[in-house]
Image 1: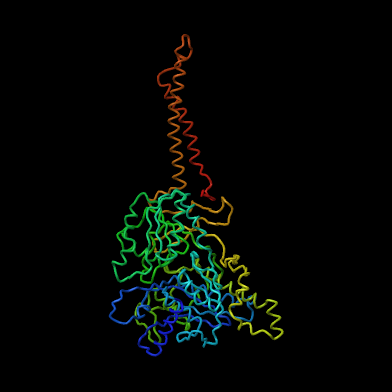
Image 2 (image 1 turned 90 degrees about the vertical axis):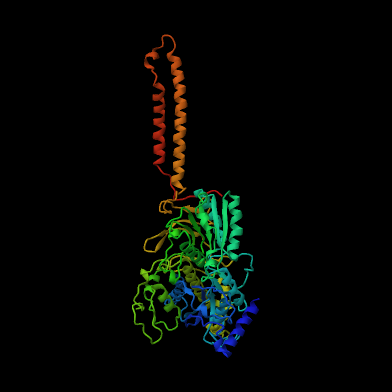
Length: 611
């Protein structure tokens, strides 16, 4: 199958050269920076518009270039460039050698994923498979992709050349052959935190939930894994819905039929939470459905969203005036990240319209700031012209974030892993002895497959102060940060870390939560700490009144019996309201006890729910 796809692309390339007017394959944008060792990057920052096919003309890629860009995902490329710049300025790491990069966008389309991979392997634009005519391109590794489908498509080609591949998305390995020699994962296997989601549900008492998942192989794997976990622990499923990834945006009926019964689920009072699995483009589709659907006039939902690690809150350029109000108070299991020093300064130094070898920057600037850039020597004489002085820090978070996102952090660590493995190979004793005897080739001419020997044992501390290494399965280990989304009226938002899930921690320490900073959808009754205490106190008060009445009656009968004895001195002290006084005294004591209990909250900093 792979060879057939590559053959089709090759034929298309030949036809494009012989008949340029056919325009079978698009000229994809790219970002190239030369270096002694080249790192390839395949990213997905375009939302391709699948249009209705009229069958009145030959197939064309014209609509690819008109697809919407997702400005926020441009940060993935910037993270790669920042890491390369950081390494090249570090004279202790790879001295006398430089890193370069070549970044392509696959538009999240299978054909273009293979096409982009071939562009990295061979000369750009006019390539011939298995013939490397660009002698300056020394591809040492490839970073990509974001999703499982594109990652495995890239691996299908790279495995023939044994070039190391680093994925930066969070997805399960599923049932595929994952023992490919070239495959490295910069994030933990997402199967590790599914149990954490179940424990979170049990902790808050959310036992009636709905599932929404991307309609692809990863989404299907998620459903097949999570549904039994929920059933085993007494959590009921209200519904299971799949969201198609490929929709026709120009067809309203196709778009509106994404989740036809979602409106009914929102008003179902029995459902506590929605568990949502997908990626940045899945939530982009769902958010568009919410904005354009019958619930668009509502600002709140009395439900809680629980989101998986692959999801990021993004908008396209034309959606920049939207927000994520519908997901206010949502809880996300996110890939752990930490901000490396210097990234903010790096972003502030971006100069649009001056990067000749970066086709993406101008596209990003226009989409992010809703302005028009000059094309070539043609100036723009209107109020919509981009000045280049626009400030990235003023953009709302769904459009662009100044802080390094989880996916960008994974890419950043991938570049450093490659650099440290190259450094170890450069100064290995065996290699140095071979060079000294004149039997070795130049270091920069070594084949990429030799890097595997050093990647497996690579361990380093990045500039953010965190240790990075691979386990025996060639994946970076670690837990998940638990974050709470807070949205603002200015269309922006903030993620507040409220906990962590660590599957390797001892029992009782795997799930940690801090509930005090959590926010919820307005009107939603949080079934956690407050509800639990109210229920306990309400039960205590009712129980106290019942016991008080019984105790008062018992004392009344005993005292009355003693008072009716002939010659008893208690007769003069007893009168009718005595039982009310006794009941009042007992109730008063119990009331003060429960008041003290209610106003003295327990510690909620560390919580571990039972399995």
